[in-house]
Length: 409
Image (cartoon, rainbow, N blue to C red):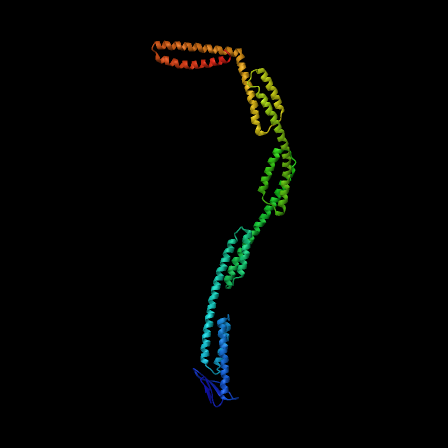
């Protein structure tokens, strides 16, 4: 019989292992000595020790799943419980129990981690849905469209939730994208309709602009071109492939008209500048007639100047008031001389003036006599009244005497 601390071999060759629950039969050994039997089953024990050590290392240093780790533990435990080895089986069970605790802890840790990741994914997807729903009402078509596409890529990178939650959030997300796409499609369809209407309007404006390009009715046509330009701006933009061509035709028609007008106006401006020079010379000639000393000669000379003046065409508008004012000043001076001569030589007017002066002088003399009489009688009230009447008559007399003086009287 042979033995060691963890096992023995009896005289029949049966091998036993010692455990906390007592001896357990390991097997039978008939091929050699008892020492060789114990050594063989001890080596098998060491194999289990190595296997457990490797499993402990894998659990500690790799991402071995809890399920696979438990399968491996159960496999080793079956071998330990079968007690076909010689060694400290209870120590192996303790190590396996501790390993189970580690695996269970890892399982709970991973479960908590998955819960955290799921919660984070839910919050992330809810945030994506909220942003997508906000973007669905945006009119920034390009920027919002690009952002929605980026949100889809972000969504694809997030882990799935439970089926119902994930489906509900995806439905909202997808609905927001569809709503935006529908609004964008309607917008661009409406924009296309507006651009088509703008194209038809601008083609009509181009046709009229081209028809007017050879007009010589400068003022009316220029005004109409301004109206056409206002209508052009109000029409909005046509499709890109039509807009530039229509604008070039429209602008080209205007350029033809305004170039012709500028040429004509340049000739007119040169002619009017020459006319101004001639009229300034005539105004200077007319001004030399002043002061009037010989009315008949001055009148004849001014008539000659005026006839030549009328024969000259227009002058620049901004210079017209000044040069015409010089001629009018000479004309007024001659007219005033004519009026003075008429008053001086008109016998009927002179007679009327002399008669009126005599009547007023007699009335003034009479009032003075009445005033002296009233003062002498002590009737001051009557005298004051008569003096006020005298003031009015004296003023009329002074005016009549002035007029008579103008007749040379």
